[in-house]
Length: 551
Ligand SMILES: [Zn+2]
Figure: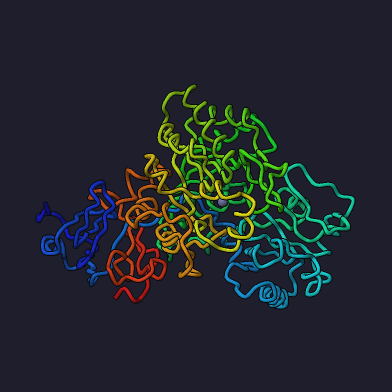
């Protein structure tokens, strides 16, 4: 099978397991790369013939080779800015530690007019709503605006509220809520659309900052083995950063951008979105997808539910969340986008949002017939059992963010009590989706959650948080096996990005987008999946990340 007359390989990885994720789930011993493509896969002794004087040979010594990970829902510019600004994602130790970290950051940046940051965790604060007083103590004069880990709420101090003109007389905007103290004063947390009241007075992020953020994010994601992604929220500034890097040849990742659908607008935006797609790909960047955000999140009762949330007394409330996009408008928008060959990328948390998304694809299928736009629904926290078979029937990809599928404070204290037992059991139903024949893809939603695919896959496989590995699993019947999780994070996400013909599995002729881990994840002594490390990341045969430990 190896053409001995062929030119020598540029790289030979040998002593594998080479986990191909091809249709037969084959594992091989060795893989050769030539001219950016996979030249051969097979037995070590056969591929030795491809070693020439300039071939780099890496002895794997049992360490695993995989296709590069592809993240089907991620926010790299946001995550990169978070790494450049006051990043709170990794702060542990509760509210005091978070405030201490903000104080340190503010002290280290005395010239910044605003303290901007992200990544605080709702469960660190009573009711998930940190107060302005906590910030006022350390920032009495400088305004602060800090978004939480999921980006659906912001924490501000009194100075920021004052500059934004928010006081007890300010009414809640249509898609948001100003958290208030019992006497009606703004409390310091802004939910959903009410964040705009402050966001619109923030100093604008400069193009230079956006480019630095994207470069920072890209290097970080390559170090985690990520070779391609779908950016789930492209606005003007993100687009500019991608185009600049792509034009300079600095964009090494393959990126599909999902253009943001303005949920306050209507069908008039369809033409503009198509026009932006039609400018074509620049380097490895193309904007062929449209992000439609259909609802909020459960923790603040803005996810769209088929039945109302339960109140604190355990009885149905009168709130079933919001439809961010009217279902009739949505069906028409998706039909038109699909007809133009654009991919719908939905954000759906609640079961009503999922149903609205599926209904809109059904309308598009009825009007347009089968298209190859590969609609996908991200997050899929709550799926009504009646809707599980519709993913396969309508060819809608289930785009899972598995890191959330475990018992942790946000789930146990802020979600389960307000869903009740039946709906609690409908959450993140990955195994049920598989059984129903759905195509699965995976992503992180970074900077909402960790960007590390290995940590995310650990939760998909165990349904236990890596931060509390002895906790009971959350709905263990919905666990995936490791091979299924790897498939979703490689070929599954490649399918979403229309990259599966070139990447996503290790097959001769495909592009050499691949990674080497520090261990074989299938070995009996591998330890927790999330403890594994990436040692080498290649895109089209080029090294974009290398740990000296690769040897
Ligand atoms: Zn997202």
